[in-house]
Length: 242
Image (cartoon, rainbow, N blue to C red; front, side, top):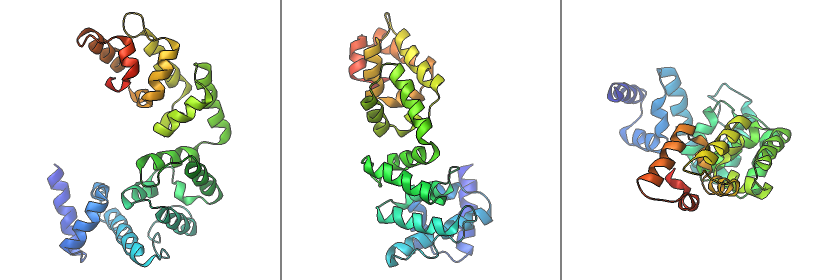
C-alpha cells in the first residue's frame, strides 16, 4: 500500500526535473512531504521545501512562501525568516506552515506568542517549541488563566502548572473535564488509589499521562502493582511506566 503511493510520487517529482540527489536531500529533510496526495499539492509543498533549503544558503526568504495561498504572504515570509534565524529546522517548520492553526500567518499575535515561548526557554530546534507556539498562539490569556485555575483547584501550585507546560505544552489544551478525569482516575487506581499529593507528583513528572485513557491508566497500574509487585509509591517515583 505504502509502496503504491510512494513510487508514483517519486516518479512524478522526477518528471518535473528533480534529480535523485535532490529528491533524496529534500525527502530526508522533510519526510512528511510524501504524505501529500495529488500532484498539485505535492508540487506545492515540494517547491516550498526546495526554496527553503536554497534560502538557507543565501539567507534570502523573499520568495519562500509565495506558493502558499493561505494567510498573509508578507507575514509568512517574515515569520519564516524569524524562525529560521532562531534555528528551527525544516522538519519542524514545514508542519508548522501547513497546520490548521497557521500561527505563522499572524503578525502581532505571532510576535507576542513567539516572545512568550522564547522567554520561557523553549529550544527552537525541538518539537516542544512548536507545540508551545501553537498553544500560545491559539489560546488567549483569559483561557490560559482559566486552565491554570483548574489545575490549582486540583491541588497544583502555579509553579507546577508551568513545569508541566514546559514538559508537555499541550497540557493547557486539555479540557477541564479531561484534566479532572485523569486526576480522579489516579485517585481510584490500585488498592487505595493515589493521594492528591501523589497525583500532583505523577502529573508533574509525567504530564503525557493526560493523553492516556482512564482504562489504560487503570490497567497499567494494576499490572505494575499485581504482576511486578510495585507499590503505588514506586509508580509515583517512576510514572513513566503508565
